[in-house]
Image (cartoon, rainbow, N blue to C red; front, side, top):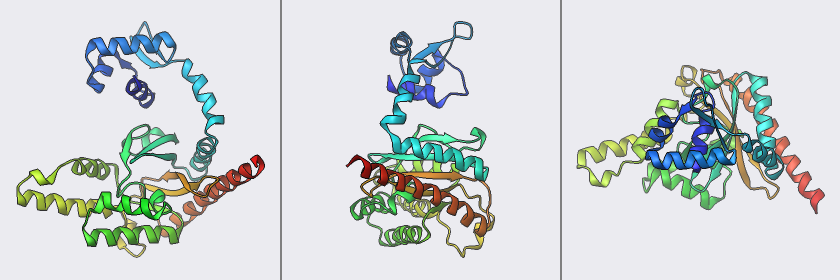
Length: 286
């Protein structure tokens, strides 16, 4: 049932028919019918009798209104994403961690410029994704993040450790992993190379080495000037000082070093303000 709600949420600009929902989620007609009827009866989904398409229902507005007070940090980050999008002219987003996955919980800006797989889709909390969270995570979680992308490969581990260190020094993450590369990373990451012939296993291992760090270009890399910057992201901390989520901007175009610094400064100003407001709120509650 939740899969249907998430699908309708992701497809806000595309009207889905009964057959679309069943096919997209791999549901039988009987299961899809039962779920959609229940959602419509409760007001969580709505069916247009003319076009016979489904959208989110009015009852979800009540839930959405409550989330602003129930999740103040996420609400503040979403407002910041909207301000950033208007200020810099690129889409902004809020990304939260759920277990070993990352979920874009807010996306503000032109949908035509959004990176692939968002909003709502889960992506692995593993290299090359989630650097802005991992760089300020606990040491144990950093090791786990690196291990998910590097395994026991010493060279890959060291490269990722340098990426996290450089990100902390800079104050924000700059990622050149294009939507096409992101999709390739996820596909290759699901393959079990142990079940494959040795030559194929070697190729897959090499691909993983490249994919886990291909989106990280050093500041002196001449290729930066031609590559589109996909994401500039910074962490937001909760009232305990722990990294809670990340706020991001998605230029999806080449940027100069100066342009990156300007956007990074605006971004970190916003994240610092949110973090500070959370600390003040916690002090008032004591």
